[in-house]
Amino acid sequence: MRKGPFAGNQVGVGLLWAALLSGCATQVPVADEEVVRPRAQAWLDALMAYDIEGAYAFTPPAYQSAHSYQAYSKHYAGRGMWTGAELDTILCDDGTEFGRCKVVYLVTYRGFNMTGEQTRQLTEVWVKIEGEWYTSISR
Image 1 (cartoon, helix red, strand yellow):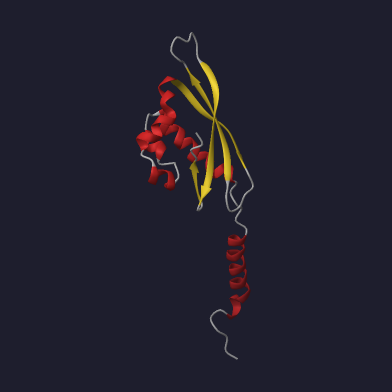
Image 2 (cartoon, helix red, strand yellow):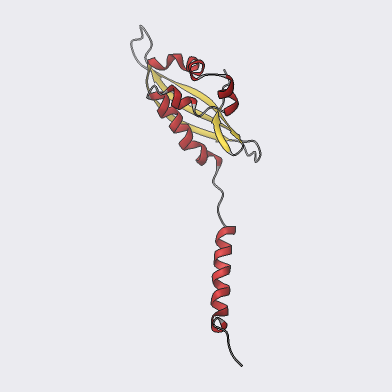
């Protein structure tokens, strides 16, 4: 009886296929918070660099089709008084089709005629649209 080239390796080939298939099946889903975090930070970085067009790029396509980046910039007219900002917390719902995350930033600013700086929370809502996360315009 003649043996094929893989006759002695059937167990090895079977184990290889099982390992490959199990690797695909056991991918751990990434939490929404971890997906939103770098986008929320990039949005903040753009805003801190006065890159309004860069921050505007994180708005939903529907918003962009109806509003220019110049109109968007009016939402952050006080940005010139900010002395610093950092990402604080992200809290996402457990929606699978439509995700929503509340992102809290800590913004430090000094206003006109202020003797010192103040820190306040800025809350932005991020929404998942067709698999991508965008900052929403709720003002």
